[in-house]
Length: 292
Length: 292
Image (tube, rainbow over all chains, first blue to last red):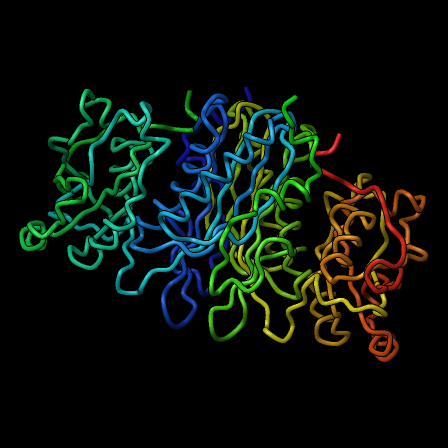
């Protein structure tokens, strides 16, 4: 029987596809982190990211298109935040059924405009294409990060504490469409707490914490998780689309800096600890694009 | 009656959507040219581009996926060429029906890899997502161009000659899947001929020449066009997906430099002349994503 994409997990698929691609001199972080990182030789590092949302997968045909536009851009900004950086220039590609009302497209761009006006970033270009049905919005962009502020997924060490911003789970009730990318929080974190590793939570802690631990060559243990009101622990771990920050930090640094966490930020909570590789828990669940 | 996207042309739609987006300090060319251009303050300029191809629009379900991969990347490289630049880092987003065979995806990435190995450019990252049916490949990337080599669509002047590389029309017979992005030709052109304006031909000369003339604030007249063998003039003007370079140049420069055009390049032919605004021909036809 022919193997279908659904028979492979998303991570396995990506690993398979990327075999045999040479790196580049200036590409200091390639596929596998929240953004790619380019070193232009001097000044801040450049972050590159692309992300797409699809009708019927990430939003519904009846979702107000302004929220769709917001979400399409906010997801990319969340990835810049996860590296400790800020957005600069974005390109938006919209592939859409020509039968959609013009008002739908107007709403989409209103949402994009609002998100950029709120969080920064300049629309530099894009493209429109026909799609036989539905809609897909693909947003690519470049951001920048000061060299000393760059945080990767791979910097965690055994003994580091694992923390998350905000509360997890239940995003489907609305947050997945109007979440705030954690740019201000990330900027504070890289200046003060200096996380050893960081990423954004898009596929659920159950999927994303193992990814961070794996990238850092560690195991992990998991304690209590700050769940959204009304959500079970399983939902907090598995629902996905939280767009909160997941980070690791040395216990000493945590103790010194955590009391300074600004009161107007969402809560910052310890949820576990990194352990030497091979030790600790394993988790299942979370969102996978290609599994049944 | 509600207005549908198909009731607006693609150019009118884009103009409508982009109203109200602020520019950025470093963004020296925004939407409307083949690439956006960012000035980092020193050194080469940065080119940003995104482009997408869709199953059922730009390729068929039965098209070998290796050719689809090639095409998805070659289109973006053609846009870097059109600005006088070279590719640097690319991001590839694939949204695809999970029922596609894994071999389809392997072929796609083989095509991407081949195209990058042939023309330069580093795969820096990307994303995969489920699509309810079919496939869409969105490629975003950054390139670079020496300041003195940057060519825009808007630099043409009345009296400039209009030229194209290669032969036009009939791309659907195969060239649209295996065309060579004109990077070497563009590099030669910006060094020697120094075009006043340039773009790549993706929607057909009938659509793209008016765009270049409009951007340059000119009218134009059109003479003979080098058609692909077996193609009529109407096909050469309207078929689209030629991925040749369309450029303008002063008659004096043309006379001096044209004899040096390398013999192993495709032909370089004069097809017309820019005129003062309001004078000359108008053209209809060419490819529009949203018109019926």
